[in-house]
Length: 234
Length: 139
Image (cartoon, rainbow over all chains, first blue to last red; front, side, top):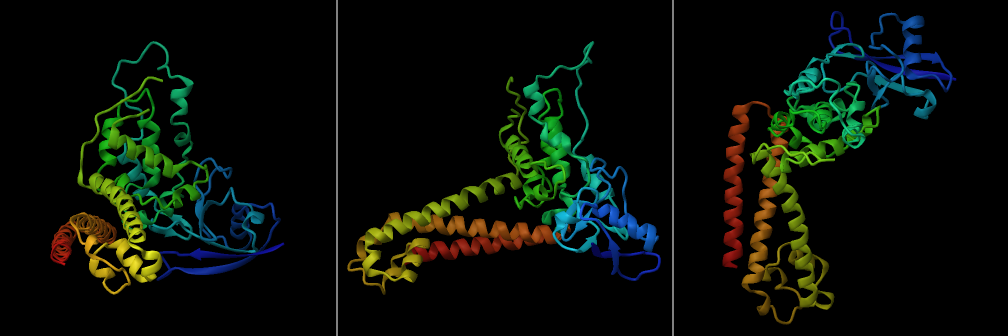
């Protein structure tokens, strides 16, 4: 089948403003959108710029807007889109560096702000710090985050005010707040209770729809809110 | 699994307003339901049109049913319905102005402007409450 790709193009060195270019490529219904981008770059226009790495939905490098939805280009098959016209744009809410590449620094700044690392000031035990399967299951969902930014850049609250920490940072805070071995919950809850924390979330659910790992993000944000209100982490 | 608990970050403005928005939203629905049931007891099925019924439901003021066919309004002009109106004015105005604050603060990022707008909104909120309370208590 022939697929028409309409791709957002912007080269800050030569373009005054962004524009769209259209490419026609031969594709199988089982091709991934990333395959089509590679085809365009390899066969038609080598200047097309996009991020990719593992190409198997694990590294989170190729999150982009595909027909209006934030998706990983390596996880979306042509047949799943139900059309032979595909529009591909960079993620919203982050500055575009070139074509489909956005500056991820503001996103990672928010990620770092919630202390996304294990905090435990007790002396390390001889072997591992033990945890029951139930305690591990408590935060299992939020361990799946691959930091692709599909959730944060689908959030209208983040589009409007980049100071909002965004869903990805909250998901990664949740992963440690509810970890029975961690001792940094109080600190993280304090950070997330401020003006640009969890109360900026208006429960729109865009993040949950956008997540390529199917993390229940809005639920995780709700659980962090509950922890802020009650102090209970079970 | 043994329960884990940490000290809460304590009450802060954002948390309080978030909580208030949920509570006031639910409270307004409940108050409207009480107003609606009150109107049915008053005889809305035979003596009121839909507009009058809605006006009483969302703001149970006897003036709102003056032009309907309710035979005797006097028993409905009492302190109980005044309290219902005061609660509706308070919850409605506070819920609405806080919503407006959130919308404005999402668009306006300078702290100085945010503070100025908060002050303006607070003054408008107080004027709205004052006017609403005056209307309820004098009509």
